[in-house]
Image 1: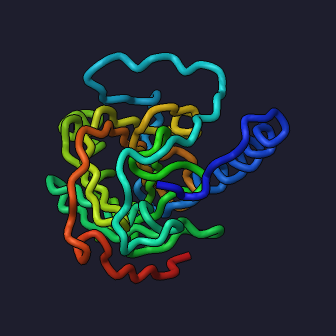
Image 2: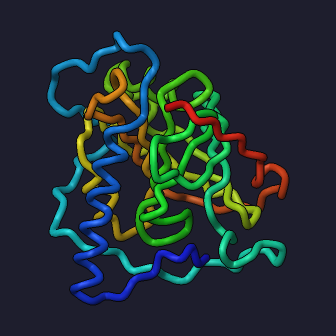
Length: 234
C-alpha cells in the first residue's frame, strides 16, 4: 500500500519535512469556509467528547511507513492502489468522493485527503477534510454543537480506497475549537481524522473527529471508485 510518503529517518530530511508540514497545516487550518457568515464560534475552552481520557502528546515523532496488511487488487496501479476515494457516514447521511487536497483553497462537492500524511491501512493518521456546507461536512458541524458532539462517539465511518476495499472506523473523539494539527502529525498507529470549519471564512478554530480502525472489507469497484466532480468555491 505505497502512497509515496516514505522518507528516511535522518535528521535533515525530518526537519525539512516538519517545516514543510507546518506551513501546510497552517494553510489548511485557515481554509474551509462554513455555512453562514454569521455563525460565529463561541468563546469557550477546547471541548472534547471522548469515551476515555485523552493522553498527553509526547515529543514530535515521524511515524514509519509500513508494508500494507494485504495486497492491492491487480487492476490498481501501485501509485493509486490504496488512496482514499470515498467517505460515508451513514448516521449523518454523508457520502462524498475523496480527492487529493489541492495546494490552494479546498474544493467544494468533495472531501480531500492531506497528501503529506497517510492513507487507510498505514501506520499514522489519514486526514480527510471538507467544507462545512450543505452536501459536504455540515452535518459534522451541526452534530458537534449538541452536547459537544457526544452522540457522534461510536458512529461508523466508511472510507473506501482505490484498491476496492472499504476501511471501517469507529468515532472515538469529537474535538472542537482546534487550532493545530499536532496530534495527527504525531500519530504512530492507524487513525482517521476528519476536519471541517466552525465559523465564518477565516475562523481559525476547526472541528476534528477522531476514529479508530476495526475492520477492512472487500468493496465493489464502482462503489469504491465514484466519479469525483470537484468544484472551485474560493
